[in-house]
Length: 115
Image (cartoon, rainbow, N blue to C red):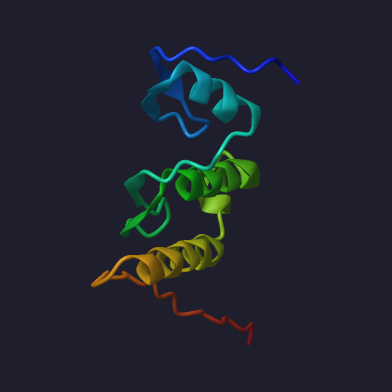
């Protein structure tokens, strides 16, 4: 464990999500040792259906990373899985913000049969 600094200077700290925050130098050392999840609200677009949704930058980054894991081609991404994550993130946000409007993605499964 690194020695604790007592520096009171203000520094620009970058969180894992990419957002910057002005904090005291000693706080930056604490944040770097146990990174916290970014809580900035961002509006993102579902890459499959095009609907916008609001979530924390941390959850948005997780979703984007998951999409990138599936494939580089968007046609290989399961839109239902993306919407499940969007809905779960929206529920978390709605439970913490009064008068929140949650946009829901709806997909109708199409079943085809060979005759």
